[in-house]
Image (cartoon, rainbow, N blue to C red; front, top):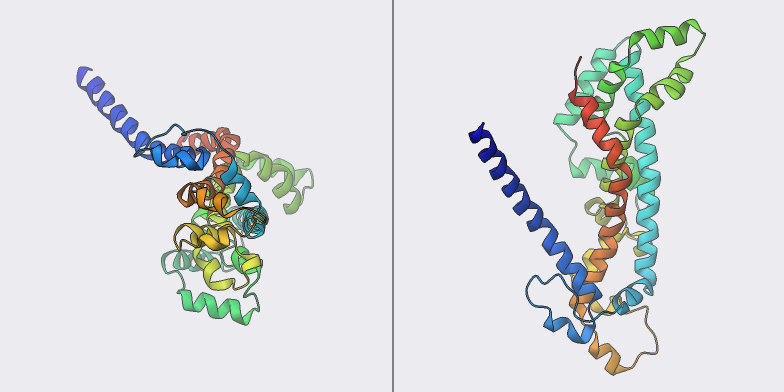
Length: 292
């Protein structure tokens, strides 16, 4: 028992250090973004308390039409993409888990093959080009409309629903569509909420394929614009939203804190989403772990 307590304390200490290693840099970025530009230099190392207080960095960012447009693009891609992902994943999982049809095993083998051997980037690009989806939101939403790994997780949840419920519904004359929408979907809310979180985070962080498929800057998601400002140090475009400011005002700005504010704008929406889905996420994990 004593050895167990020591091991538990060690694990808790390691996890505490791990949390600090993640949390402190985030708080440092938040402190930089909220600091008075003239006092940012006083913020030493990984300080987590702002020096002074100013929202000027956020005012400049939200006045930039390219950033505002990119935020709206990311919101649209995330919401529509997640809905499409969940609908197609749930529908396919139901068909594979609760119906029998000729060639079902072949379909499962092909899905496993796709999961193990993903198509190359060139193949994906040529497919998008042939479909006429280049430079459109659809290229970011549809290229992986169903994640095969998530599909198998949802199939497992659908298979856990007792057969007696499905048989009772069929005796009452329920069609497959009614069983899917009125029985399987409500009973699988924890699993669907968990997948919604995974799909949502994936779409919000979409970057790599957006740089390849989207050439119109007005359609860029936020992560692409973030790269332009933070990685490429494009400070000129970052200040496009402010007019009529004096040279002294521009000289007083700290671009490091402006970039920090841009990172905060990109991270906060997902941080706000986690608490809303956390209870479903926990229940989904518990349901997946408990076996009768």
